[in-house]
Image (cartoon, rainbow, N blue to C red):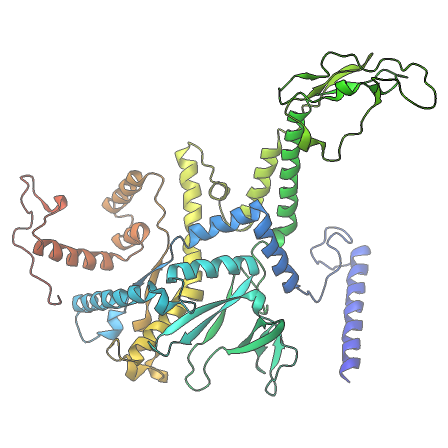
Length: 553
């Protein structure tokens, strides 16, 4: 029954394709995007992605291709830098609703600083943070981003350490996510590309392949704990993907062939320049000339550029009659050069012409003088297709302030979007797992967290504690003084807000900046230090009395 239904569906599919084609041909009212019959080709109802082959080719290209390596490294170093930095931002309006507005914010900032200190200690301790006890959180982020771009995806696994009772994090490259030969599945479950789904199409587990003594083994990693509901593993994608896609495609999947051929072209141009330097001219022999040469004529110049080999002896003299096929003394046939002749030549080597020979200069149109323009155009298309300014990808900036500033602004748009997406996919789940475990084992006491955790009506309290702002590389402006002056002018004329300008220049809200500055001034007062901005014209403190010390030391 199922087979007959499939045949019927396929038959209807072919019928629809035929009707559309005939409509195009006879001018019927069928608009499908084609400008003329066959301009877009047939419509494919099923599209199959060879994830395995794409991953292998992308991994090989990164190892061997300078363009692929340069693009990936440039992205990762700008996106991750040394790692996204966490700034915990508990929501005071939800957690301390019984207090007035100022007290809410003060308490929220104070709690945020406490949590940030604890998380920094955890994130910068490889023996506590990393499953392999080698990487800090920053290095872990770089590895996740790098390998997910190259391989298309991978999974992050949270494993609770028995000694610290805190999660240690493991990254598994997508190349190790494979379907086992004989999986033991629950009723209604199915596997696609190493990912197990339930009957509703939700991911429930990943299968990690490992090899020991030539035998492949598979470990089933659940997405969530069956009893606790704790997030144990999740997939991280290297690029954009459709919601129905099981796996992710490598970042350069649509550019593999282009980068491969571009690298080949560059190698050919480099070899052309070498040949051009090693062979400055050719020797054209006269017609009917006997191709013989004295042995002395085939001597090399010994490394003197432009010297003539042969020691002055004439070559190519008419061959006198001989008997028995033996050449007279002093004569020898022209020797065929080795296959890899360039390896034995010296720069600028010239051989003496035979009698009647004509000297012809080597072609000077190689390497192609327009190759750099062609190379930039290819890289520019690659950059543009991924929303990256070509100037940033190629590290080529002009002297024009407006153009450089616009390129910098465009890349800021890209980076701000990336930080948001990467924090949602990687850093925030790691932070959530750590903070939740810290509270559950009693190393952090957050008011109302335990009581609200796991309850349907407690999600606001839990999420209010888990709020965290993530900042990446703070790229300096092209001219910081001009940027600050423009912001000040907008503020003076009421065309912007302090909060908007604070977020633009520091990544923090205006309230966070003011609360932090308040605590900094209190610290400076205790240290008997007055910054220049707080002095009057006579060099005395402008605000008179020393600010009161904070209630929390």
